[in-house]
Image (cartoon, rainbow, N blue to C red; front, side, top):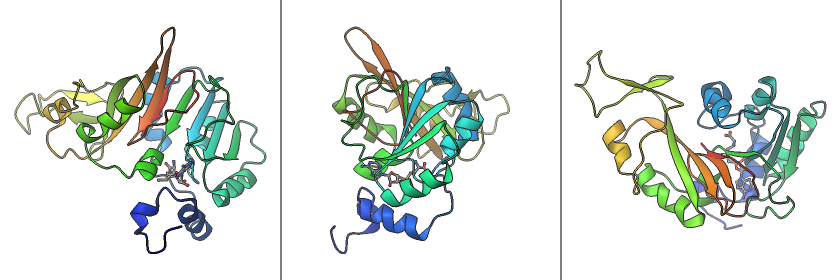
Length: 240
Ligand SMILES: C[S@@+](CC[C@H](N)C(=O)[O-])C[C@H]1O[C@@H](n2cnc3c(N)ncnc32)[C@H](O)[C@@H]1O
């Protein structure tokens, strides 16, 4: 522990989260809740019987909502023993949900190909402390692995759709809209996103990363900012 560490720099430290969850036990979802992202999860994780990993689950009800939506095998990990113990107690009668204390930087307890998809909502953010538009974050993802990356966004102003600022005059009712499930055209640097959404767009980004391998393709999801090179998946990784 580093004494006097500003809280934002402590987001990757287990003591910070243990302390926080000891004092704030009520369920809380960072950024987005499951219903807001369900259409995207359905798109990339269509088979509900497959095993899904949620990294840095916290005390979010995202996984519970997935189970209520039909997902049958959701494994949740978090670095905080306080939150994992609380979630194990809360969901002791729910066989579709498992909670394991784990530092996601060491995935050795799981064999390669253990999961059909991985969902990260705010955890890579905590570890890397990165903020900003895709142009700042794509490099981090690309450094870690051979990914094919799709970028989606969730408008914080309009629940499901956002106008494309590149086309049509502002305020025009003729402007095209983009659904959550439609990826944004992404160039190598990520600068194309600004052309589509405008500068300082009020959105949450969702990075859907498909690991490219010699003989197989693995998809990942990333919601906001992350890279988990050691993660053993067989398909999607979603970063929110
Ligand atoms: C911003 S919160 C997000 C919680 C939840 N995913 C949500 O969307 O509400 C980040 C979570 O990541 C966990 N975390 C931080 N570093 C971690 C690590 N190295 N391994 C596993 N979990 C970690 C924290 O304990 C915390 O629960």
